[in-house]
Amino acid sequence: MTLEQLRIFLAVARLEHVTRAAKQLNLTQSAVSAALSALETQHGVPLFDRVGRGIALNEAGRGFLPRAEEVMRRVEDAARWLADLRGGETGSLRLQASQTVASYVLPRHLMRFRARHPGIALSFRQGNTAQVLAALRAGEADLGLVEGRIDGADFETEMIGGDRLVLLTAPDHAWQRASGLTAAELARGDWVLREPGSGTRAQFDEAMQDQGIAPIRPVLELPSNEACIAAVETGHGATVLSALAAAPHLDRGHIRAAPFAFPERLFHAVRHRARHQSRAAGLFLDLLHER
Image 1 (tube, rainbow, N blue to C red):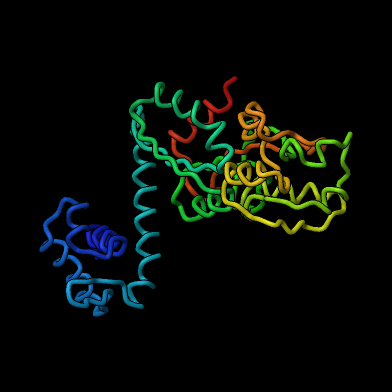
Image 2: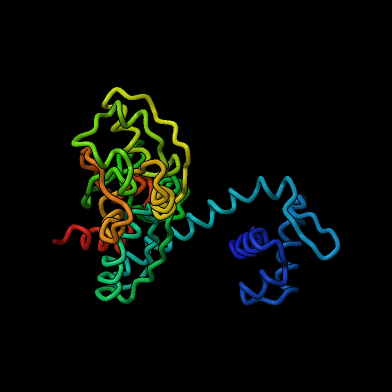
């Protein structure tokens, strides 16, 4: 099989459409169909079910898909390694960041990097911490930027800053009338929390565990900081968010910080130990460490 056949296979598998894949690859439909047919004939294994005009991966194709993706990731990694040897302001950098870092820390650094290194192509995706680590493991990102503690011997981390969680409620919530709150009181409250896998949720659970409190079962789990804020603005429940994420909402006065101090949490740049760190990734790390 050839790399071109793999490239065509992956495009058709993603789009489940020969014509759209051909357009994306800037090839003719007949060239795409011929490449798929040659791949299947060469190995004697059909990879797609063709029903009328439709095309979809069959069982063999679904099994072949992650192997083809891994081959192409290794090809791309090799190309980045050669680009580093060539030197100069070229190449690409694929970043993925968790929500708080993506929204409140990363944008200014992206703009500075773009101005300083215009020849390096930047791509960026947002996810929660677990999704960022999964992308690093799969070779879909060169560098991750996350909040909270990172477990796993396959990752190298560098601290790039930090902030604290803030306990937030509506202004008329009973906790706003307290001079101080205990962890036991928090355990009895109604909570709106980020989803499991987010750095915010992991640090909150860890802080409660350090106080001897079992994991809290929230009344709602929501996938974004803004959704958590909107829920507690109704006057029901409490949430915790990064101080950076909470600041603009506190300024508007729709929510207030309640009197409970959480420990500092750190932001980290993360990369996979087994994968080549490109020169572009090194340049971005240097920029993050500048004051």
